[in-house]
Image (cartoon, rainbow, N blue to C red; front, side, top):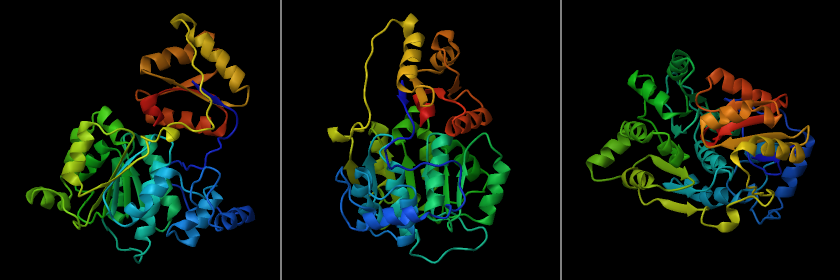
Amino acid sequence: AAAGKGKGKGKGSGSDAVPSAPKRMRTRSFDVLAQSEKGEPDEAGNPPVSAFPVREETRVQLAARGITHMFPIQAKTFAHVYGGRDVIGRARTGMGKTLAFALPIVEHLAQDPPRRERGRPPLVLAMCPTRELAKQVAGDFASLQPSLSTLVVYGGTSIDQQRQKLWRGVDIVIGTPGRIIDLIERGALALANLRHVVLDEADQMLDMGFADDIKRILDEVPAYKEAAASGGKKEGSGVQTCLFSATMPRWAMDVAGAYMADPVTVNHVADKSSQASVDVEHLVLQCPWQTRAATVGDLVRVYAGTRGRTIIFTDTKKDANALAVDPKLRIDAKCLHGDISQDQRERTLESFRGGSLRCVVATDVAAR
């Protein structure tokens, strides 16, 4: 169980659905930006955003969100992604992987004149294991460059609305593999113009059974088809492939071999100092199964109090259901896992964000 008071100290990014353009920045944002423009690393040694080829308008927008310095995975992969190299990035969830590929891709696309033609196929395709992660990634892309048309696609929502948006033309598509395949098979999603393909949380997509779906999607990309016919992807094929994952199972290595050309590997997981945030306190308590709910409830009350928000992770959906309704927990909690309807999941997340719901019991897959 993880419990904390108020907001975290990190400078990461996150969002819901595909947001509109960022709100007008306050004066303080420019003060923060001015500090980062000095070109000095922060206390953790992370380089400032100004040290990278990022447009001023993007730096201002990031500063408004409290992002003035790059996390290690972002700093180490930026030049490679920005330069069009195939990249394998290894970092744990919460280390800033989304911005590691979204920021350099957007900055690269911003060099070209905006596309306005109706029915234009996407330049970027990013695949994610869950709806929630897909929405977060889409939100980050959209907030970085509102002039780029970003569409998030996943099951449980109207496919007709998604088809209509694709027919109007988009620049970036982010989604779950199942819905992406549906749109390809219906002739709504064309992959001929792709410049960037991203596999986010690749190990989790494997765990959730998406391996075959991902291969089907990649095999629909003309550049990959040509590469397969000529014995493998070569540099200069026109499509950049980025794979981000905490682990590299055999399947991920096979994907890298088949769809990547001389990829650069940035392994931030191997760095022991990066495996956990310095702002997180870890407690390990052994207790009998029958006292689990009461013990977790006591922990939440001690560490989160009456105002903090808490996420409790369980191994299975059954465990999540049982714990959330256990009277010994003595906390108003709701479940978040794959068997919960999409509408209910979104209502639960919105209540948790807004503070009306203080505790969520989730499986680790749903948490992503």
